[in-house]
Length: 407
Ligand SMILES: Cc1cc2nc3c(=O)[nH]c(=O)nc-3n(C[C@H](O)[C@H](O)[C@H](O)COP(=O)(O)OP(=O)(O)OC[C@H]3O[C@@H](n4cnc5c(N)ncnc54)[C@H](O)[C@@H]3O)c2cc1C
Image (cartoon, rainbow, N blue to C red; front, side, top):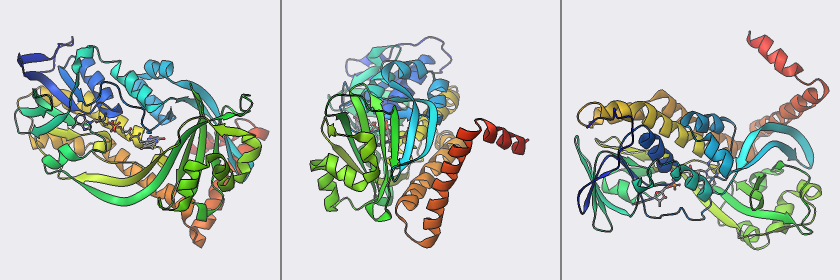
């Protein structure tokens, strides 16, 4: 079985109860759905198996921008993203009520469910999505076997586990999660609007925390189709009473934590349910096994405040689907040796390490109150604010100086 076809073939039913594919992807969140679309477009027989026909309205990443866009473009999803998301290009960054700087660059705001729907919508054959739960997995050097809750079976040459933070299937294979930082961060998501219905004076806004004791990294406000979305990222004990206050009396608590926001928000209200999420930083162990590979959150979780989860999973998808899996499928077998090539891919390792580094940096920048971090924090915002002022006075001058220094 090789992947040198240039048209997508439908997955085959070997019998009424067994589906045969080149690659079985378990989990149709963002990682699994993107991987399925890339591999199927390249002509592989892909079975994407997810418990749910439509990804539910759950709180995950809600904005895509910066370096992530280049990766979406490279994988061929940029048009899909542009039509599903709400475009914005200018973010006003403030702290203690004052402008730090302004970030310019294309970005899109959208609910995670819409992002996953966009990725699933790029499958050349919608029948590749099998709505079912994988209950058991058996992997070997040759063929891999999955059991589904409906009683059906899937046989494939390669299994991709993209099951997010759900670790049950991994455990069945002896893959464990090592927690690197328990309850590392807390995130809140909600939508806001002016009470009188008037639009906000900014396209998007980031407000950084003021006091280390509050543990507020930043509140990010950006447009989605339903209005102005708010993502609040904190490094604080999730059992602290402030969490309850943020859920019950969101408007007043946000302004108490970030008083400098008041002039920018005016008289506002929360228009939907406040969701929150406590994140453990974790990475898997015992994952190097024949026939199976883990991508996205199934391999390593990320700090939402660092905003590296999507970049990491895009690197996983790009390296696996464009480089490693096509080569593996060209020869017999799916040995441990083949699988190890993905886990030792320099781009993957760099993205995983960068994600952990940024998670620790954001936590320290937000909440460490020793003298070293206090100075670093001041310098961090001072440098940004001076750069912004110079840019305002002499547009483009700093960029010229930087490129002259690099030459
Ligand atoms: C609150 C929050 C905010 C975030 N904000 C950001 C951000 O601003 N920037 C950023 O870059 N990242 C952010 N992230 C991280 C980002 O959202 C995740 O990295 C990304 O969603 C992971 O996608 P995934 O496909 O790996 O997992 P998921 O989206 O969780 O998908 C896993 C899928 O597997 C399926 N599944 C599991 N087990 C089975 C089974 N046995 N059988 C069948 N199906 C199964 C589930 O149904 C699900 O559809 C945030 C995360 C959270 C929690």
